[in-house]
Length: 208
Image (cartoon, rainbow, N blue to C red; front, side, top):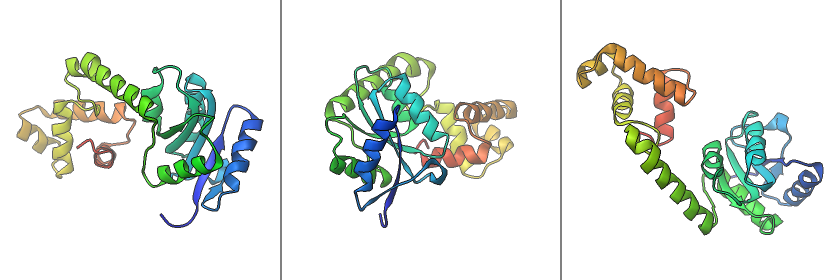
């Protein structure tokens, strides 16, 4: 990456916000920005006592402003919020004790570049969560861990190849209504605008 990385700070209280802001403003590679300057490239730095519902709400609030990638400073006392945090864009995690100015700057720059940094024990717990989800919830419904069923994957791949609804239906021996329903389910589940957006999202996220 070139230039300074933009970071936006959000915590539950003004003292914590001021402390983290001061720590990052002293770093040449970081530019701390207010919420009116947030873009999709801005890294959200969220600090909370623990990875819980309050932390997830803070992340959602910043995400609504345009942030898509986050560094979270919090203790992981429960595994319940691990998967939701990752789904919301948390790519790096540090405890408050680890969150020095230097370490925070490293995590922000790495996150902005597309990297991820989870403590080994947290990563292990996350993998167990994903495995359990796959085995007990997704697999019985024919859905892969990426959130798409085999049929949905097939339909999206053919749409990505430029086929229209009738051509997809013919290729897969489905009715056109079935194809339309599959596409509707995908766009609804991932909150997408249309089939073009669905294909773009699937390619970008590595789903197809």
